[in-house]
Image (cartoon, rainbow, N blue to C red; front, side):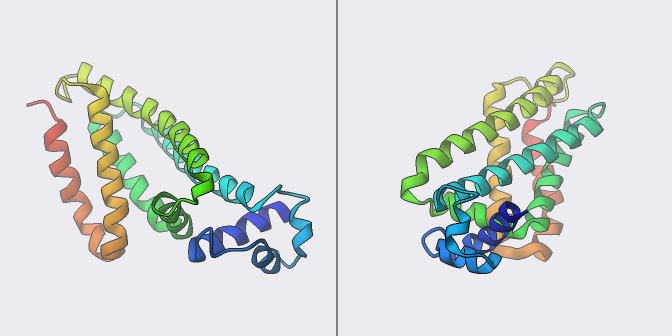
Length: 193
């Protein structure tokens, strides 16, 4: 219970103040415990930060896995479109996690860069396996043009990453109507003529 409260308080502080701008004392105060009590649950601020980062990455992967289980009989276009919609909604519904993720990616604590990269790559590998299956099936069915699957996956990640950044610039209200057009233009490059 206290561990979860530490994670929750740290997420709020890290997303608002960044890694460098957040101290264990502030986290403890937000939880209502003394700083030494944190060490009953975590070895360091680094461990708290890495735990939150990993949780955020894997929450999204798990949501995509659940979605794909629910729509596995649908075609590649619909599956990829729904992953895009789910990801966009994830950025909206989990605003604090999204802010934390942005800070972690663009302003990574120097001492954690390698570990953050390793965690990111593990989550990306899991997502890539999902995307590879969808895209391969789409190619086999003639729905997606033939090409290097890894190139398609990288392009899809660029789409998701672009929306992640654009949402920061334009906000939800301006981005919602753009998603359909963005998807339609993106699909035009994927589809088999």
